[in-house]
Length: 290
Image (tube, rainbow, N blue to C red; front, side, top):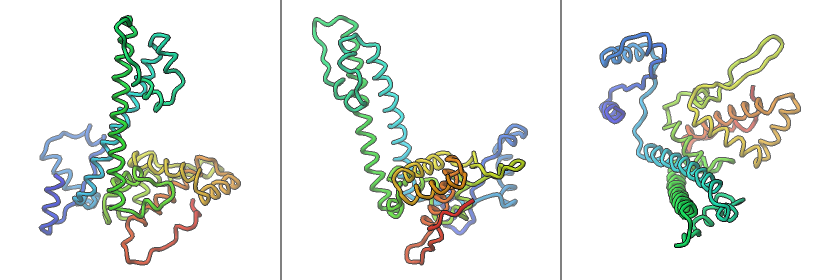
């Protein structure tokens, strides 16, 4: 569908991306291809549509590498947990040898285990299982590192300006680029903040005046913003200074992170939409936000 839409756009046709139906619509209306097409047409006529995503080989490559890395990291974590569980239930001699190690040293010591002809069945089985699982961890570690190198190379070619930002590395930059997609897809920095789940939502009651973060949006992008802010709070002096001033004004840590995420969403949108060669505004240099 995406590539068909891209072909229509190349021929001068106007192509729109329609939001998926709400759950209420799905449960209270009949469904067929014809009805879906009619609802999409009504949505487009009602202007509740966005420009269709542009086909970009770099964007597709980022998505493929990033999702594959996520799968490798998840599988590696599961393998490490399984390895530790095997150590707990192994015979005492093996348990003593592998106890109190970090994941890296645990794998190295586990790979050094060897069976002997005189081993009992439980010891032999434990060693074989531990060696196989530790080998799986090593393989997934190499896979993850290969994918991360490819992501770093692709991000450096696609948007090197992101890597100049404090707290942003190749993995977080890749997720930002995947969610943003291309210039013009998201019409404003406020829309990008809403997509990221970083738009402030009024949550005042009585004499209490406050905001909370949007619980919707792209949760992977939201998690990425959160990771960047936590890194900046630890390592970026400007962010740490703002957080200290916010505490003096009575802001909680959660409120402070909310404000910083909203600022970061604004700054990233302007950074990504900025066309090289044009003057770049510096409104982001102040952290005065709601």
